[in-house]
Image (cartoon, rainbow, N blue to C red; front, side):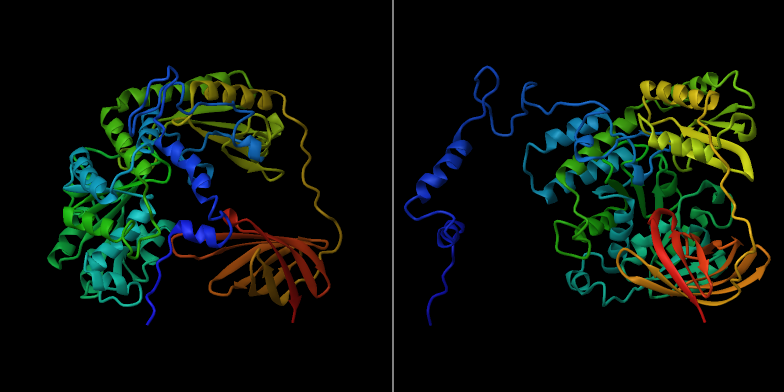
Length: 548
């Protein structure tokens, strides 16, 4: 039997014609010379392996708000007045985080060794036994779930997600939220409960862990983490707390209450790398969570946390321990007050500064709410939000109020990830639009006999990829329309109106933890109608319907 030949990369290149045999040496020489050549600084001094580059060599900012790496690919940056929302790229990382990530990129390390050292550091900084860096809180949730299912048992790990003995996670109904996808993606059953007694009944040999969404409103009730954790401890069930955008307090209130694992976002109020998360708790469980992710070939392999993100997160946690949080709150309150003061003298306009929410709640940011009567001012809150989003510089905030029926309007501004320059820009821009808004017309309501839409309709929704088949059962009383929406999986009630041949219907599909609002608009043509449906953060799709 012929010996199996092992091809080198160089031989593959030769065989494919990318380099010739005769020219191989010369083709490789320049790169070898480049590798061998010592790094020299601006004065010609030879550098050292892993040396931090000189100030002449470090990355620099080569643009401004109107001309930068984003605008050059057709993307408009924005001033973020809404807070650390992932869809608008979260918070602004601290300077020391940026520096740490840059410095980390200059070296290669063994990730297992790095995480071992980080585990101890995170433990000291958080008051826990151990800690690991993850790619966000949802990733920490997934890795924690798998750690509680399989530990570091190699066979059980490799059998996931199809074979597992522990295939249930208990969760308070009040903790259901869109981020518990980190649990659901592991292929486990979510078992809901509403009381401590019900929790006792639903814990079984199949229970891998309990998931609790951090919320201080339950602290003095039977559904507190402390009470639920005591019950779980009786049965040997690990307790996971999703603390996401809450603050990393010392002593840690969740660990003191009995949590075994606690997950935080690294890219929100800690202002670390946006796609980072901090998982702290029992050493063996944290190590099992890391074992289940990259660089290991286990269930969480896709959740790779780079050395840059890990060291950037460490810098953020260290900075969190040094930051003067009371001074920051005072500074932010002052910024909010300066926006409120700018609105003085405008008719019907009231600006109210609100303080940070209590400890333990999400995004403890002070801010200012500006409210007014759009009948007096001439612009609604939703019109203001759209105007600012389309303006230059681009400003993103939330606005309420629509014409002609809801003219009481407002906008809200969370200030804590803004800069003083942005505070002034936002205050001046809103002031000018409230003082001298563009002209807006009330939406035109078609007149004439309303189209008849009562009956059963077979509805097809055309998504970017794929179609959905639904059924509407509608009733009509003049212009008012009510009915039922039968989706592919979820069902909901509908309400809306029809004016002449134009129809508008609203519903909320009862997706557990994250209800999905649907807004259908379109035109009626006898036994057919069609239009578009707005699906909140999921965008817009086209729909058509035929009456049976």
